[in-house]
Length: 349
Image (cartoon, rainbow, N blue to C red; front, side, top):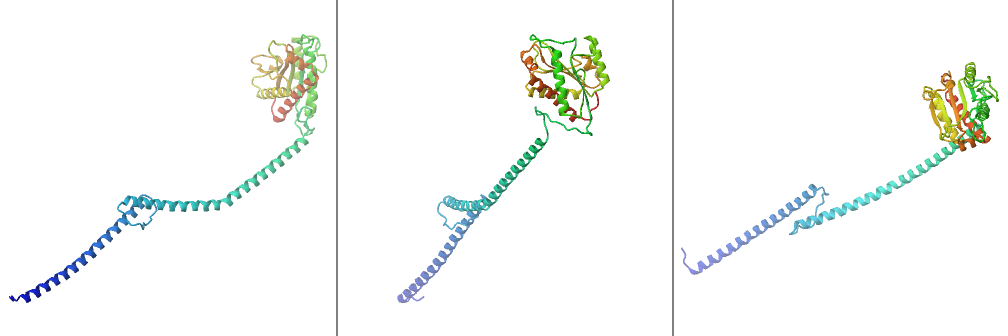
């Protein structure tokens, strides 16, 4: 081994230089490797945030903000930014949709206005048509329709019985009003209105004055009226009376229980009488509750009408007033005519 001091010193210096060079190289390699590891870690964190956005249902927005020491704060900031951007997009879209729909809404409004105007015109046209029809269809003084005479019309026979007469005066009021007089006046007016409203009807009267076919009353009178009914063979039999029942004011109706057609006629007649100012306090009684020979034994649609009570001041006033009596007659005739027109082929009872 060379023990020369100078030689050993040079070797020692050379060795030191080599050592420093190797250390520098190693330090550079280590620094590069460390930076690469940090970069790789940052990329992994960014991918994790992106994945978290997707899982939470938010838009996939890549954050360009460096990862801070507080990752939760960074994620909240990114989500806020994404939501604000998304809100802008939605607002813009809604505005665009609203602008697109505005012409359609205006169009729909115009269509509705046109439709309403057309409907109004149609209603007006229909109303005008109805007015023309109403104007062309004649009515009597009380609004009941008048049917024209026709050779092709179905003819019905109506037998009208003015209750009592002659020696049989019926009930009497305290002011001297007698039932037989009221029933005759009313019966004649009903005949007049029936012939006016429907001249195709055959109207027959049991009596047209203060005489009857018999001098007696009671049973003998009923037999005579029954004979007139059988000889006439009407489609409808109408018997007119008043009554004098205490505390039972108003119109009373009597008909056979199994005659639904006459039941409907009585209901209609009650309504029409009420509309003409007569008492609405009326009652409906069938012959199984209160037997009546002429009604019960009739072979046709039979109805007895008691137009009011001679013991009631309001009813009595109506019966003694010609105008109100005429209104009652028009209502009775109008009800009969309507029932006949609605049931032209109804068979005899």
